[in-house]
Amino acid sequence: MSYAAQTQINQILQEKRKTMAKRVQLVLNQDISKLGKSGDLVEVAPGYARNYLIPQKLATNATPGILKQVERRREQERQRQLELRQQALEQKESLEKVGSLTIAKPVGENEAIFGTITTQDVADAIKAATGQEIDRRGITIPDINHLGTYQAEIKLHSEVAAQVDIQVVAS
Image (cartoon, rainbow, N blue to C red):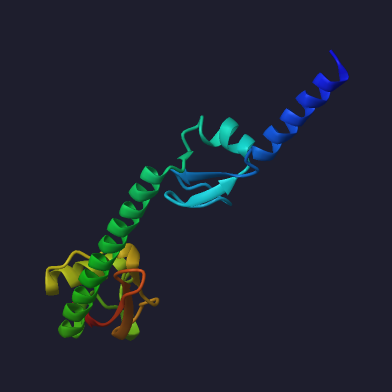
């Protein structure tokens, strides 16, 4: 091979390297730690995309059609979150209208109750008073071992929480 042919091949290879993408844009199909959440547009190294993300179906190439789909999904999710927040605000209003919940427990000496009041007890009292199903995992109560009035915080949504008074009485 002549020197001129070799330099021409080298020039072609250099042009190809310049046009090769340094980073590749992908849309994630799943949450990936330290990279992003599902639906995010990310830029990664071409080898990482070609050898891991795309074959494992963790991401797809970012085309205009896929970007539109992602934007539409984000808008739907935003609308769904707004509806959930509105429902949570309505639940909060109805819980605040109830005012105080009464829970009856057997009592021993010094007004100490047998056992304790659990989040499930509070959820059952709310259901009896308002007819609403409340997830017990969203209820935060202090340690209740005596008769009296206590405050419970009920997390209805990531942005909405309600305060409810709990009155513990002897049964």
